[in-house]
Image: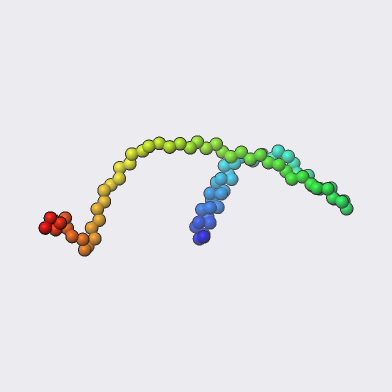
Length: 81
């Protein structure tokens, strides 16, 4: 994977994370430090992603006609012979 691909993935990840709303719902608590320490408590978070509306529509697009003739191709006049 080249550096450009890695940068693109990191940018997409940053945009995804930046669109989320994070609120801490519980404080952390350090463990009691004794000979027999009891477990601590990790904080809890609620993470809400952004609302995304996805839809589709039909669209007509004008596409130009392109004809390419290589140097060795016969001309249209030669086909009738």
